[in-house]
Image 1 (cartoon, rainbow, N blue to C red):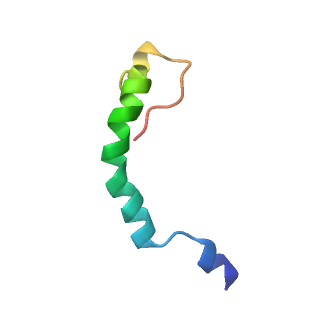
Image 2 (image 1 turned 90 degrees about the horizontal axis):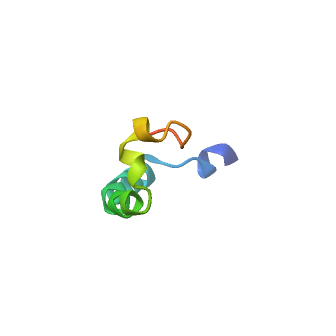
Image 3 (image 1 turned 135 degrees about the vertical axis):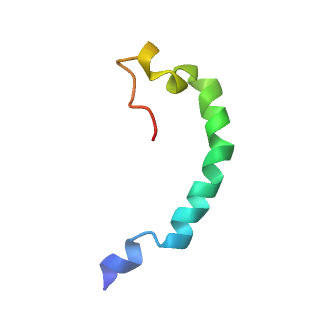
Length: 48
């Protein structure tokens, strides 16, 4: 099953999720409006 080999496994997803809190402050500094979607209605959707 080649498709299973290319699908991210749980460990991979968790590893990415653990890194998100480290990345988000940098993204917030670059795009401060990301935390305030109401001030940028035409911007990208706010992350869940």
